[in-house]
Image 1 (tube, rainbow, N blue to C red):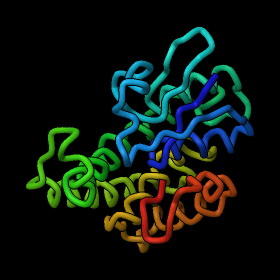
Image 2 (cartoon, rainbow, N blue to C red; image 1 turned 30 degrees about the vertical axis):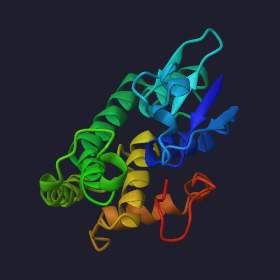
Image 3 (cartoon, rainbow, N blue to C red; image 1 turned 180 degrees about the horizontal axis):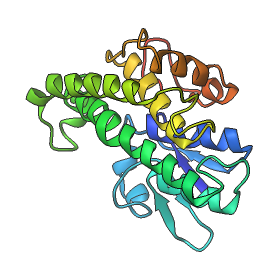
Length: 216
């Protein structure tokens, strides 16, 4: 296996997952800021031009960080970060999707259309006029999610999971890009601090992270 890694939130989610699992994979760094991921050498493996990507020994390329985490969990089921029963896995996927569809996709696109516009306007369709609205939607949905947590220690219940990894990494990225959330929220505020205190949270930061720059 070879992991195509980068300084970006989705690759950081996978790095945090690997650290929590105690897994080490050979990796190659891709410079997404210069657009290396859009060059023929990378597109030959992953036509979507995204990171992370996992090259398997038979030549298969797996992309999308959640799909890669699902694959690795099947190979290395312990410690379970998706779930050890069908019910646990379903709950984890439910909460990860709630976070992704309602919050992190809005954060991501708002960044593309605002702070990241100089980087992305020549690469993808952009809608700068949508950025402020997407940011408002993300903040509203963060409050919505806070109200649904109840007494959960972690998003999907008593067990730490990829749902926590996904939301934490993207909220940490958002803070570094001018989209902070309200840390006084009664459930998500303490939850964020609990995740941040895990050794894998800091260790998953890319070595290329600079003070005041993108946290990924």
